Image (cartoon, rainbow, N blue to C red):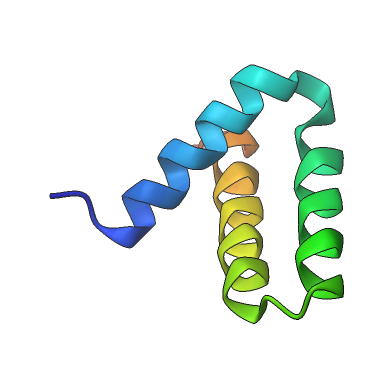
Length: 64
């Protein structure tokens, strides 16, 4: 069974594959649309996906 964190990472990876450089815009548009409908759970999910996408795109930390 996947943890919620792994699910968000998988979703972020899928969105990145589908939307490439436009992934952040896609996620922002989804957050906006969900917010307009009052879907706070959906907004929270897509914010978590945005954070996961940020982690995926961040260069790995260098070890000393």
